[in-house]
Image (cartoon, rainbow, N blue to C red; front, side, top):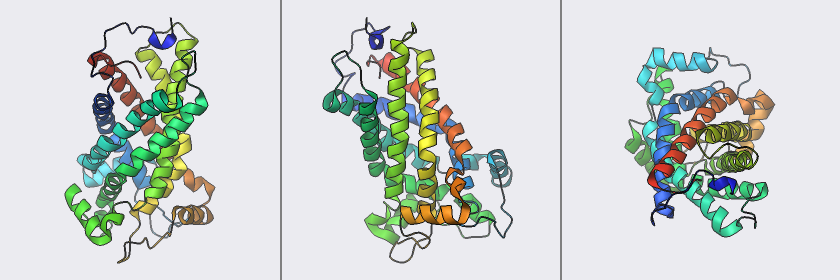
Length: 318
């Protein structure tokens, strides 16, 4: 019996394996994972922005370190501020996770194709993850921009700066008014670069690790295998995606001129060079611990939820 089929003897409804049904299931799983782990994402964003472009900040930095940052936000801004920006984050996954998951499976099954023995080579998984992640992130980039800006509002207020946005809709309309349609895709290049690397790590590693475990052990296609596979995908995705995430966050959070152009960096390469020159190479891994600490539980929550809702709805395993 093929490893991928172990434990999956059921009649599959005609709609269960359709693109759109899987799209909805992936959005549900992503929404659960995002809500559970969102405070770690906000903490990571605050860490990446503090001390920007200065190796030794002249002013005292309010928070240093993951735990201190999270506790500082809760103490000085209120515990609920740890979920500030959750709405656009979930909206992002309605597009991003639905597209990336649907695109990956479609590419895997219909474009690249499996080997005659039913296996899916790692190089094909890597290519599928790169393309799927890039596509999903490009479409969802405006919601990511809104999320990053909203995450920084609490800190701006504490620093005595005026608030830029009052809510999700106001953020969208403000960005649109100041930069036009192109303004909504500010920072899309580092955004897509990051998503390509993260999905290469996440989707390719999960898919490959899951099939390796099923093919080389007696474990069935269940929560234990899903948990082990997601643990592998989380660490690989964090290692590949952190430098691009730092660049993406700084590009998207920088102020813009009247033409909607960034005033600190002209491109993602410019941001990369300036960051390394003024803060050192390790600045590219600023926020790695909270990124990994978030990706690990996010990946675990997402894949366990996704595989279970697929099973309960009669959809075949990923």
